[in-house]
Image (tube, rainbow over the protein chains, first blue to last red):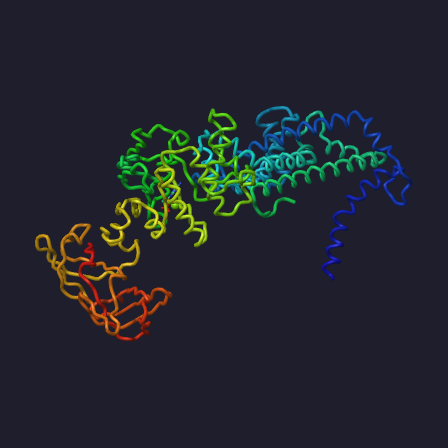
Length: 266
Length: 361
Ligand SMILES: Nc1ncnc2c1ncn2[C@@H]1O[C@H](COP(=O)(O)OP(=O)(O)O)[C@@H](O)[C@H]1O
Ligand SMILES: [Mg+2]
């Protein structure tokens, strides 16, 4: 009984703030407080009319897409090497690659800032953020793709070669289709991570802020709060959608390889 | 029979580890050949060397007169049935079986017919549209077989193909594999650690230990005339008794601990007559316990029953005899009127010097 109460309290604590986002996004009043004033889509309309926001969204999408692709490519190489090849010091190398997973983002942000600006003497731009986001997304990609590769029987590629395929042909015809769900899942998750990452983007952005940085800027103007709520609502919906699709693909990958689910991120 | 595969002086190192230590081997066209040995002795390594998945560190390999040094795995006239079967889970049964025909220039209908025939050959006619995932272990194995045989290789390599099956299925597949091999006439090389499986199925067997071939012979010779103690111990059951020997021309005089003196022809030392100290091997079924009223043409020693294991059709006894440390292992058919002795009962053990094998200690 008490366990059930605890679970309910936990869920309320976790999700109530998020549920408040859409509530106030549709509330006809600039003050975020009860009682509600009435229904409006005014704030969503204002989103559409703000040019600076459009620039921020564009920058964010560009960064998220490229980071996702880069991180997934890197993750693909690492996961394949990690599960199908054996080389000296493999465990140590794999552990080291996963390290950014537990590294505080602020440290990544500050150290990259120092390297880019002081050491390399380069300007800040979207590319510096892409670099950093690739860095923090790669461990997630490796974790997801490791799962996809670990489920794979290494003699499967050899069997394809044995039946006359080249090494590349065996990878393309056998391994790739079997890990595709993992790749899709990895792309979506790193896209999501990059899209709402704030600290690094804040430290490393050039002239155009990314969307989270732009939102943070809006918070200084209380009358803009409902607009932020509207934007937040869209982001929450988008994130949930992407993560659901990612999880769907991850599970389908398992089913395709005929395996039981052994966990995952969701 | 003509020679199909020749390996000479093949060595394989994994880093410092010497996995194959000078393999010289000739495998004949159309034979059922087995590589038998304990786990880790290098059987899979040798098989993969023939398939082209491992490069020998030194030595040469020819298949059908062609040197395989520069021939990559996908160009070799070999196909393999993997231990895990390596069925492609995202393809249907027919797509799995037809996978090797992808690069074939034949018309689609011809390929489909070939797939159908291959499936029929392994007893899976009509299974073409099933998902490979949904098959049982035995069926997967058949798919793996059909997939490899459809390319009509010169050699079919099988790495412990039956080890994942339960006992009943295993025995059934043994018979089917033998039938299949006779039908297609392709050379089969089977890797197994199961001596019974090798004896049942093979024309010839190479027994491997630690990267070396200990003996290469047909099953009967291997069983009756093992050349060394470790081969004798690995194939079937064998009692080992200490002996002192005195060679005299074509015959050898023996004094066997617990059994006594006798004389055998030098041909009963298949590994060559050892100098000085020797071990004598004798199979449990060549010894007999004499029951009431039975007599034996050979010699008899008296002992005491130490252990009885009843198997229904057979009873396995351990019998202690004076002068020999370990009890003798004796297997007896449970014929009509024969009692099962109890532990502690006296037992008269008949033996025959013709059944002795003389081995180096
Ligand atoms: N890729 C490899 N790297 C290092 N050692 C290996 C490799 N493959 C096999 N070995 C070693 O070589 C020995 C023989 O292996 P294997 O041929 O698989 O034995 P078997 O099939 O007879 O059980 C084993 O001790 C194994 O540990
Ligand atoms: Mg093996």
